[in-house]
Length: 604
Image (cartoon, rainbow, N blue to C red; front, top):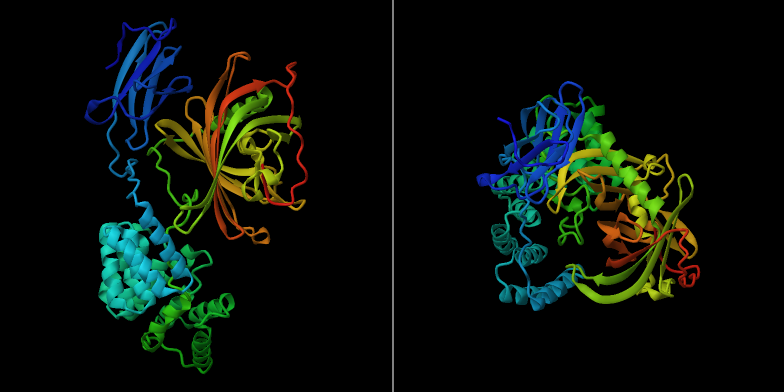
């Protein structure tokens, strides 16, 4: 029931909604309140503030459907009748926890002592160099000092697997899986170890567990296909091999062998021939290529001679299947991927059943970015820069800290043509940056949502999420192949290399400001030895009292990039902002222009 409240929202009246979560306590995160007027179909959005309340003012009289949504909770709707535009009405909403939602209180994992990290790093380096005895020494020392760590147990299991001591490997990998039930690499390698020892039923259970942990891990599907082949479950083997090929996205070509064997045993000879042919085409130098070619020739000869069969033939799988594991060349396992996960590696939680007002979100964000370009002109800030060259375990080999007096300008001399200038003290050349790699144009990433730029990207609103407790609309973007690449490029020795980007933006649900954005490269750029890049930028409001304007500017940016066989992390943070309009009469000394760089420049 809704009753007029004695409290006053505004002089015009309106609706005051307070939202509770578990135990009827004020909701611990921002919620979005949507009021839909059933008579004129107008929609009003508002978000809750610190007291878990949302105030919707100046509502015209009528019957409303009130929808309240928050990440991790079930969306709730209720009917509200506003009788007078001059009264204030109060509504209390209890949200129920969504039982299928991802727990946002993610553990940060174990803190590993510095000495142990060093031993692990040295052990990994030795493993990669094939120095197994040296790796054993370092990993044993790490395990003795820190015996309850899943990653150390996994590395020891991997080492024992390389040494073909499968019983010992199994012991370590069982321990690793118990210490971390989500360590999919440890679980998958355990399944492979059991498969190698012909413990097929155990391998099946283990690999099914790995897929339950991470259904996207193609290697687990590949090994499960091999296991089903051994158990003569050919249809299941075919299904898993097909999934491995799809999930592997080019890396899973070895699964074509299992697919071919499964199809051959199902009597689908032409499809089996095609699977073998695909493997030979994609992996002509693979150690298994010779045997697969023999398998292909034998099957083709049988088909041509009319020797097809209508019942399963187990010879192919039973006689050759154990050797199929050689097709992967390596075990297919690695240390945890360096840097943060890519935008498609982690599914972001969104509120169930909440429709995204796509046009309103995109247009609102576009207006905010347009305001930024129109109002900024030029701004000054103090910039702190951290640059690290990381080892295999994401620990810094070298670290450099710098501080700059930073000046940036943004202008649009012609529609769709932006000039993003950037200066740092009197040091703008690549020689002034760590490893002679200069980062320029960070403010330009937000221009993806500018009305004159956004058509260069495919965009989709994924739903209502949150960023640090603030309700946000999640928008995924991806560079269109038929449009110019105007946001980012690498400049090396006077040559420009445009970058195709994909990413996700977190856009404030109430004000449509860009609060966070992450981007990845669509594909590696081997021509400049750039294998990957992940960038994350936080935006925060900056109030400039002299100009009576509040602008959302980059506050912090992190860039992880795999460049020329180095893993780099570069972190920029900005503070003490000052704004200067284009026509400002205040005179400042501009930094000197830099020379044309001879080394990489990240330009945006």
